[in-house]
Amino acid sequence: FDDQLRREIDLSLREHREFAVVYIHVDAPPAGSPPHDDAGRERVFEAMARLLRSNTRAMDAPCRLEGERFALLLSGMGLATAHARMEGMRRQCATQLVPKGGAALRFTVSMGLASFPHTAQTQAGLLHAAETALAQAVQRGGNHVALASIAFGASAHLGLSTPVAGASVQGNAGKSYQTGLSADQRKVLGAMSNEQIAEFKQFGDRVSRDSS
Image (cartoon, rainbow, N blue to C red; front, side, top):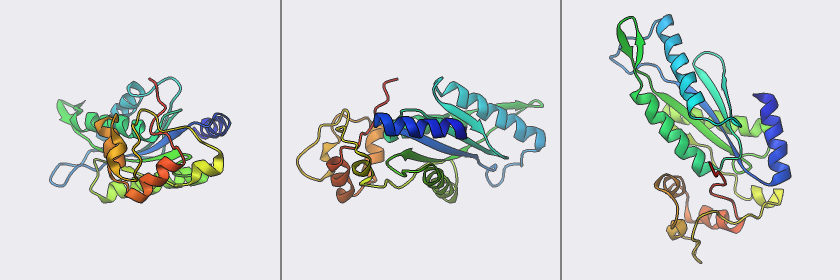
């Protein structure tokens, strides 16, 4: 995973494109539910690994970390598209039934999503941003996708000047320029202030370059 992450950063700098990193934590069973035993937890982790494989492309890099944690690198994928994909996978996890000894186990996940170069411009900074976002998702009670803060102005320092893809940009700094975006993309942008959106437009940060 670390080797592919380093290669993806080099590719991003050369080709001026985004990618995303996601940290995933399998939540503890909700209060009032029986805890999973060791065998049950492993069944849940195996189910999580299968969901990661089925929801990613050959160019992506899913990885099992320690304990109940996973990591995912989404190659060449913008922040809004990555958020939409992870929201879909979060919902899949919440409806998944994991068979174990005649019973069916359920589980939910918390996710922290960060993107390069918008939320960080170094490998260590990117992983720290994803870790911080994951902690926020857990603090909110789990079963949540949290976005890392966007480091506005990063694209200018890196020489990125690609216009917003698929968006009809208005002349003011308001949120009305979201015409043409999907509901999930508008959800991401809806959390931004007018000042943040103005700077987002100024530096031409791409909402999504994923064509899959």
